Length: 253
Image (cartoon, rainbow, N blue to C red; front, side):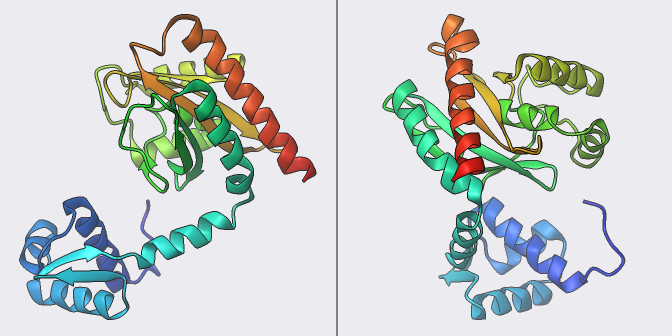
């Protein structure tokens, strides 16, 4: 994200440190300082402040992100109308398909999972509520991008790029835009092992009365099961039906 002239350097340093603690799944002062190229004394002061404010915890010299962030995240999510309206449909769709079902929104040019549910035969993948993913390599993300103005798509590409996640990831802007045209035409998007090898996904948009995108809804599963008519016809139809229910509930309840 482009830097603004009125940003506060110390605050940005605190967040860089928090992101490093998350990435490393916990770290000491020396490790954080070395990884970020920041003086140990500076890192120590930031960690002490974050600990006193109860945003991180320290266990035997290892600092970790604390549960105070869960409180903030739950507060934010529970204020979102789409979360309350989508959650029952996500659960029902997971039960019906037996697979992993997710709902996501766009924030700062990335996809953010707001709720998920696992069906009886769902495979375990690296998604969880609050996880952020690049938009170009997921069905959810391509569904979101297809609903945005081209100028906004160009802006997101400029900021986040099109990093390759697997050999199937679309990394060329022109190819991605062609794919987005197809998504708009058929009304749903595919992820053909573009973020994780062996995983396919289908996603459909949830659109408000004013025509603006609210969220994207997806079903994902292993390539050994998500194939043929299930991949190309049955799951897309289930997704569009569930998205329509959410849209109606948002408009009239």
